[in-house]
Image (cartoon, rainbow, N blue to C red; front, top):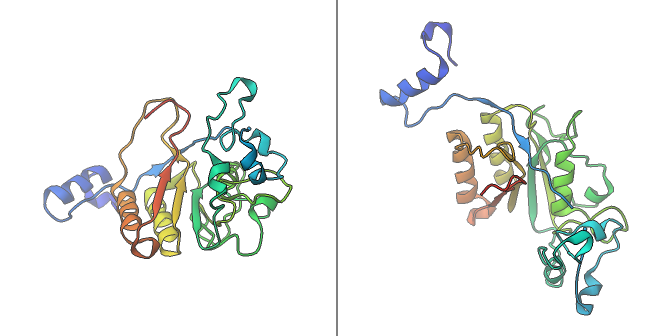
Length: 243
């Protein structure tokens, strides 16, 4: 920590630590406010794949899974979920960690035997990642990834058979060290995939470099996660027509 005795602010002290060879790298631990990268949601397919269509009532609106050209959409512009499900819908041997704001783990699409593993909240520093007042994003992102399919309720995720590891970070303000710990938690507790739907504000063209401490945690997950095979880490591109 930088005290008044230092005579300089945290940024100048960090620079001097590197310039004088006292540290390989140094940055202030900034507080960050992240923008939620919202998803939009509707249907398509051949007779052969009809058996893969789940009975979840909102599935016809999940166009990203199966686009049938409704409301002027381009038929077939989807992720080919039905074709993928003919191969696999995921399994409990695979864990998807979603790092986001709060998760409603009582939601019927996120419940079931063995569904949720190693939940944690890095805002409150406890194992309960339940939503706060404005946390409506983590539940939705977890659903896009792993919502239970074929239970005649709500939606289905792209990998409904996989386990979910919900890791909460308050997107309205969390220091970078805590974001780093979230990635370490996911990798150390068996995540195969780490999914993040947040970042600089959509539509602004802003691109921010990763803080060193966050980059180190991501590199560690890629190098050591998944029992040495490396975690697959995904970030949402967002809806701002940016790269």
